Length: 288
Length: 276
Image (cartoon, rainbow over all chains, first blue to last red; front, side):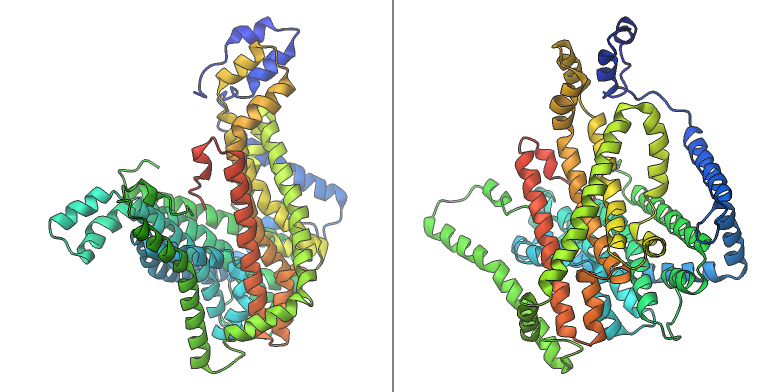
């Protein structure tokens, strides 16, 4: 519908009445953009940024592109960036695994067994409304400052998308399939394994994608909070968040901060792409 | 999610007593589950035997009552003020930018790459830079909420405005409607389900960004109060604040969901959100 060409007559005939042309523009401006245009926009903005900062001559606390590039070289050379990123990613993967392990069974149970879903729904919803990062004081108390507290936050964040989506997937199951399996003599366990889980798989994978994105956002928040509050030297494996805090308060290196932000963005893009690819390859019958 | 309406579709033998029993049972399902959770919490607290490590529910309730008469009101008000200001700025900017982008292709070709560039960088990643820019103050959460709220509503509004049926616009134009009238009476109503879905997504991420920003870079609000009580090891109060964050977040989401269902009652798709 949107790819329909705008009727040229409307444009050419209304030389005086620009109103008509404007009205046309609301829905029908899907003219093909040249593929290089986004890059050109970004590149020119980067150049403008550099020029603006240089002409301001006040480089102390203003980040600028060349400085960011220098920070990249510096942090790659002393391995601090790679190590911190690896530490953060490791926590995300473990937390994600815990979230999946606990969330999928609960979600399937909630979706498949109606009373369980009705009873636990509001509780899950209200626990979900607690921002994962709000647990950080308790997590620090329970699990200490050696990175496990951050792990708790990530697992908590990853848990709920799994529950919600697995429940959704299990709820929308074709009951005929279940009844057919039962009629053929399948027990409850077999029904769940052979019918419910495969049917819910697309929804679970959607949950996994959201979980992963959410976990990645939460790990940074958790590490930032830990980095700010835990000032003693023994803070375990330093993640990207702690690195940002020390960059902010100790080194006051704005360019490195911007670099870390870019790294965070690139990683979340990669995570999203990887999860989408996984989704496509595991459930090829769904064109999502 | 949805209120147990699917059950209505199942043909049921009309035995009033049975229905009443079923209804009664349904009425008790949530309280029973809640009681079980509280009981488990109590058991955990007793098993651990340390009121700081796992404050028992009764203690947390007491702390909460005490807080309601004390600091909590100020914290809630501070948080809501951050949220209102940041969300109004972010959602307003997102809405305006998306509408203008859908309208002017030139603007879209500039804004769209920028949005795609910035969107993967979560609001939380901005916290250190925001602290540097604004200092530890209310501006940090407001900025973060602004940034977090901006993108979901932008993306959804853009999609919503673009899917408006061109026939409708042509019809309105043929009937002599001005550009502004088309915007307010054709485009916006048609895009409304998308906009509201975006608004709800925005509120969700804004809420998370608010707590994170207050924890790290603010001097007021619920998030800030968490660490304040932690300094005194008043974990019962910390738990009370955590639960307050949950209840308020739930309440806000329910409010927006109700609004969404009410305003876009004609659109069954409106309640569908597969991106949480």
